[in-house]
Image (cartoon, rainbow, N blue to C red):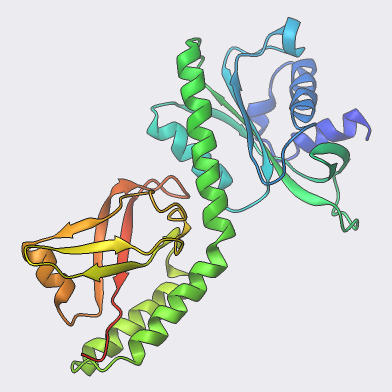
Length: 285
């Protein structure tokens, strides 16, 4: 592929003010990003946070640079933005070209700038972000690790999205079949679940729990292997929960849904506190 054509594609969607600098540096930065993308393990994001130098990188910048190479998927740019914002970093420039690639064993074999007809071609995302200059290696490493965590969260949420939609539909169907006496509340609860499933919620995680009664307290225990998205790992975001007092009474009450705010903020899409929607499963008794 001709280098000049790639460079023009790289900056095609950039704001004019973001590229009002030395054209030689711009070209070298774009081609260095492409070189960084030359090897990448399948289904894995590649991230670096660095201060480029002429000697090592062939270009330089007064700002610290974040570069990512990843399979294209929703929420990459806004999740990257909220990662930096959460750590107190100001973003000055964001460049986000998409390319069609063919890889062999993770090695880049071809780059296509137009829509590829090759069945082996996959769309990849190249993200270049400029922030205020940071020279402390510990800060740079902390940023890199934060990006890797956020991009892993994006990947599992996007990969499991359809499965979470199916789980939500199954929960609503099971709830409709229950013999709850308050049919009006049951209908309203099912309607809410239908509304959530109709693209009004960004589903990020799913997991099943068993309610185990006890003498002094009840326990909510994870059902191993049921997790999806952010809750794939059985150890993620809490384990067994002990329920006493009002929480115990609420768990045993014949109300179909438990809706609360979690104490953790989302790393995907928006920096809001996570919403927790619990759907109860009722037995015949």
